[in-house]
Figure 1 (cartoon, rainbow, N blue to C red):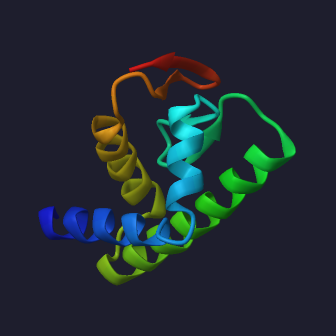
Figure 2 (cartoon, rainbow, N blue to C red):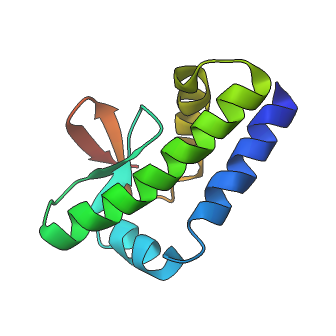
Length: 106
């Protein structure tokens, strides 16, 4: 399971390579944050923020599905583990979801 987790983190990180600057800027500006379900959320929604969130989440969902199929586990199991890791890696001052729809700065 540890290998699955390591692979997941690498694949998710790779999925951001095209939008890394935009995503980092959005996180640092407090526009988006990491949710407890393994997906990115819009802290301050706008059309641009929502488009970024959708793009990132579509890539995450595809990776989660790929890993779930490969390791014969549920997508939810993968996304929950990814959420824990993403939240732990979130920088101080950036937003994380404390409960559904509730945001707090780490």
